[in-house]
Image (tube, helix red, strand yellow):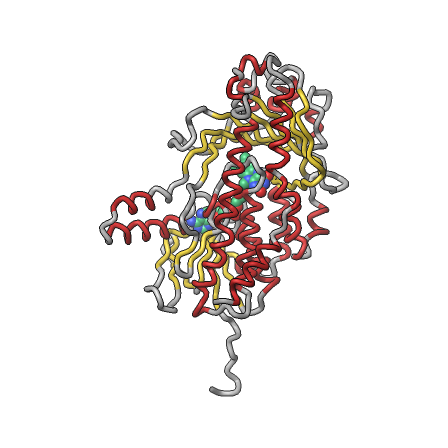
Length: 452
Ligand SMILES: Cc1cc2nc3c(=O)[nH]c(=O)nc-3n(C[C@H](O)[C@H](O)[C@H](O)COP(=O)(O)OP(=O)(O)OC[C@H]3O[C@@H](n4cnc5c(N)ncnc54)[C@H](O)[C@@H]3O)c2cc1C
């Protein structure tokens, strides 16, 4: 080798498909923890788009975001002017006078998603390595054992290569589609058509039975209205429905998601487009009989989106060879733990910790991905289940509430102590997000890597 030939210090090249919160945070964690991993990001949109307006983040997630040195910038864009963590209130509102259920300690930070994305991109040194308008169609992995690159095929007919592919391409993931089509084909080739059908059923998301009406209202539009909770996050619960509202953009606006559940709809196919426009008064009509505060809040929404909430079925693995799914691509969940993005970020944190470990090289990276899968998949699935349990509490389906009709509930015709049981369960259901630490999982991952 001539003395002028540059020596490559890159241990492998990672392609991140999807520049949502999961993909961007993974890129930032890799930037922080490694100097020898090259990253390219492929995003289908022409620019970063706002997918839903607001996002809530719990201490467990903020703990790792702080490592990236983003704290100061994040506080500048937080939901309230003083940018402190907020207590979360639960209130029953499907009757004329709202009834307090519980408040959990100050812990929640909220953001406008577009502000958050802008901060992430600002801190990414290689923002020029985000390739926009690149929609992945499929990928081709080399034969097991080969170290040849993975080939990415884009809808525009172009291709690219990488050593490791991360599918952070959201709920309708093209990476998941290829991974599970291949697994299903392999099962079919082995004569196991039952397993093939099961694997194929994991490709498409399923409807949660819920529709979310999402919108934002500037606070001045709420002046003089019956809705006064402009400065705090509140989850308003009631039979088959709930509303969450919280301040964003330093208190200048209120973010709203109003959920309506179709009993028996869970797991069925949603007919029609997933996202359509509607009007505030149309949404308010669905909450007829709810408190006047909720009525005023919903009516004030300008062009809310009617959003069919889907989830991804529990997957037996998020890894195949040198391909890994993270975030919604792996475990899209209902939003009732406020944790879908948080789980995408936790995936990114552990994955970056694993990939940047000195013992992980191209030759053993597929084994290292299994360590990531072993830790992250069961945890995220647990959050997915907990989110569904929260929905059942919000919608008064459990703890004796299943015997209370919507009419009784709206007339206040139920024993008040039944609300305590809901409050207790909600409080304990959120404890992991407030008091848990993902650093324990990072430590476990690093220990497992020593045995590679
Ligand atoms: C009503 C509602 C409220 C929510 N509130 C919260 C909350 O408060 N807190 C929280 O933590 N979570 C919340 N969530 C969940 C959260 O929005 C998601 O879990 C999170 O956005 C997932 O991040 P992601 O990066 O995995 O996927 P996404 O955010 O979906 O990003 C995927 C990216 O991939 C791109 N892409 C898609 N297909 C391709 C392709 N083929 N090729 C290339 N690029 C592609 C997309 O354009 C997008 O940029 C909520 C969800 C809903 C529906």
